Image (cartoon, rainbow over all chains, first blue to last red; front, side):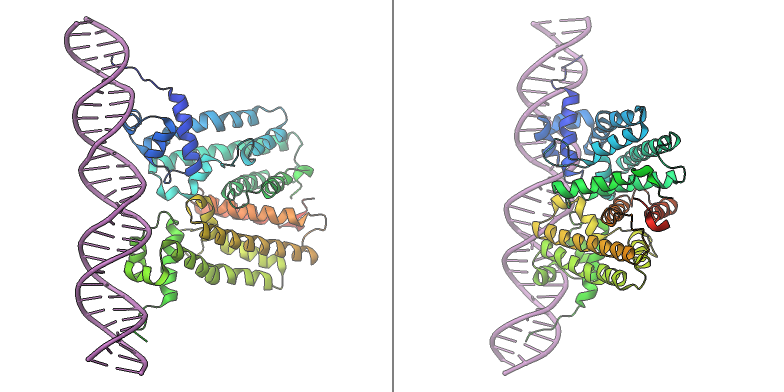
Length: 198
Length: 198
DNA sequence: CCTATTTTGGAGAGATCGTTTTACTAAGGG
DNA sequence: CCCTTAGTAAAACGATCTCTCCAAAATAGG
């Protein structure tokens, strides 16, 4: 039934994902994607249809390969609080990469106006999933006695989400090893000492 | 000494400020600025030199007209905690505008890579000023007994800054009246009950 | 081998971008 | 009247962008 594809779709998606992740949607050109993937524009348009659909495919790939495993680990963790802290650390810390890229989903929020509507809806759905994971972890930690009963866990979850978004937004501003670490510590501090906010 | 300027520079800067504020640097074209200001590109280039310098002038104008008054009011407020809360409310709440625009300075962080270096440095300097204002307010509130002595005020200030950035980042995502309000309330909750975090 | 089908790569259309230039009008001061 | 500065409108520049098109290449089934 015709010629077979020569490239590995997962590996190509990963390379394009990194490009979008670093540069954002509007600041990534088809030429960039050609260079990153090694494919020509003809192939890209043949496979995905256009930049918008390509971006959507990248987001799905990002969720599958990056976010979902983290969320699963968080939800399945025996120790709810530890699971949440691990999730935050993985999302907030630069890790072994030379540059902290933030979160592809959250990065997209600020440029939401430049995004095609379909991508915007997709992004929002993913963000809601992330927020709910955080909320679930906080609820479970409170039920397990790791967070004081006096704490309003809905508010605490919202605070955590906000700080996570804030750290992502500020990644280019406070990118020194020190300030990045301090912001991460400040976020975690909310969860210490049984989070006796109320 | 030649013909005098026909337009009011402050009013022109304000119109361009709103355009940059809504669309960001990269997504604002010279044509947009022509339409917004009513001037032709010739005049714009004659007065400011180019898009980069124009953006810098807009940032200075934004600081002078929007941020500085807020920071001054916060620092001069008799009640330190009230002053800080007012500052947060003004920056986080949509107010009377139809759409919440976030903060021009913070908006620029996520697109920092697209900005000219001069603008990036300017933005960072402004952000540092904002962070210090928040920190000063927290310190003063603690000295005045409004925040528990057990609280690590540096960490609390960082948390506040992070939430502020987070709210700005998420403005298009959680833009419903309800979730925006809830995020604002969650940020303020840190300052309630004498902020007995530690 | 043949043919239908798909992939691939490159050229280029068509649009928009920031910027410069040109030609022209308008207004102030000597 | 001249000179300088301020302003508009338009054209053109080279660069870059998304996307289309088409011929060549490769591979499946008959």
